[in-house]
Length: 404
Length: 227
Ligand SMILES: Nc1ncnc2c1ncn2[C@@H]1O[C@H](COP(=O)(O)OP(=O)(O)OP(=O)(O)O)[C@@H](O)[C@H]1O
Ligand SMILES: [Mg+2]
Image (cartoon, rainbow over all chains, first blue to last red; front, side):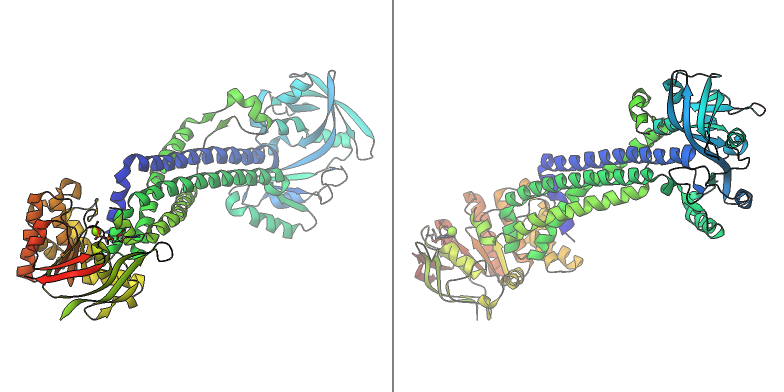
């Protein structure tokens, strides 16, 4: 048909005007893709960190353990051995969790004391790999503690320095015990880092007066995207009296964080589309008004309203969408480049890490997003075409021609 | 038989304010193969009459029949289709689609008529030959002179195989040489192909070439002579 040809050529009649729209779409799409990639990598990095350092994929607790973390709510002794062999699972560990105080000569603060088995803990958590100094426990030594750099700074502690942990034992008696700093870690998330420290589970259990206490079992799966919910369900059936949560449930702020990002991205997208709609309408209205004689002539010689309408819609869609694939290509290249090079915020990491954001990112974007963006631009152009097209078919041939 | 039959056509503009009686009762029959000039002073109603005959405007009163179809019974959209298949238009200016070549402009109406590619190519070639522009087929309007543009417009008007061609001052923007050329061509098409032309003009040289001259004064036919 001839209409696409006419529509296409019409776009290039006022090049500057068209380039403004095409350039705006190009820049908008490009900026959007870069922004989305960075935002998503921030959010994915956040979730990823939470899994690696805090939540693992699944956690088991006594249903009443809850936020109070009362020591008497323990898990059954044999759960660990029953789950251990499961083939979806690549890491599993038992922990004793106690809330208490950490005290140095320079201060004190409330803390979550995690009693870990040094061997199995490394199959689940990467804290052992995030040590800045020292070692992740020494087999034969008693009362060793691993603290974060944040706490070390707050309490003016260093490697091999002593600190005192204070908590209630099983009989609700206050226990104090001296521990020696064996290692200092940093996960990059200040909130996590300030909230907890690690000790050997043997030591804490002895102090608690419960040799076999288990408050938490943490599990890392081989393929969480495929197995997370299925495994969770299976375990729920096997251990109906145990609370079994996945990482989203354990750390609802992860979900909040993600939905927040989706909302802000959607709002930005909406603003971008709105601006685009007005830009396109404006440009196309000018085009229609400039061409009113020509459009009148076309209707006079027999081009019906549907075709005129279609021609303007086609022209608007072409004008509005040409920039998109170009912007996407540019965006794709930029994201690929950033991914390869990595994005280093470490200069500002004081600021970002306070919010739990990693200082080194590798932006990445799902191909799905490109598709959604293309559809969004298309829909925007389509919406923008309606008004100019209506204006075009409202022209009356004689009035348009008489203006000659 | 008449292909255009106008019966007591009246046209009043702005009927509720100060009414302008552009046409005050026109009776006109035009037969197949005629070469008719509508003449008269400025404001006498020539354009108004041609627009009404061409179905671009509706009369305030009276009936227009084009080959037995009373076009006042057609809806706006039906009228567009009717114009496409029955009437060829040549306007004073802005006849052509600027982004299309001469060939594509001529082809355009045939595309609207859904003619086959072969037929379109064949006819476009013949028509551009007939108006003497075989060598300009791939030029866009801006690359053609005013006279050449009007020739393309005539070819375009003929492409749809209309019953007649309406031309409102087709030579108004042309120099005398181009005017003569365009008129020669129209007269030739009229004589050899039997194409019916109805055109308006101010130009005495154009009037001299017409075989039938309808003179309008103040919205009425003052004289109607055939030579
Ligand atoms: N749309 C309109 N609204 C009001 N009056 C109009 C309109 N169109 C034409 N007229 C008036 O109708 C009368 C006839 O106009 P028309 O254009 O038909 O004359 P014409 O013979 O074609 O004149 P010209 O030789 O200048 O082209 C004039 O008085 C004109 O002012
Ligand atoms: Mg006139």
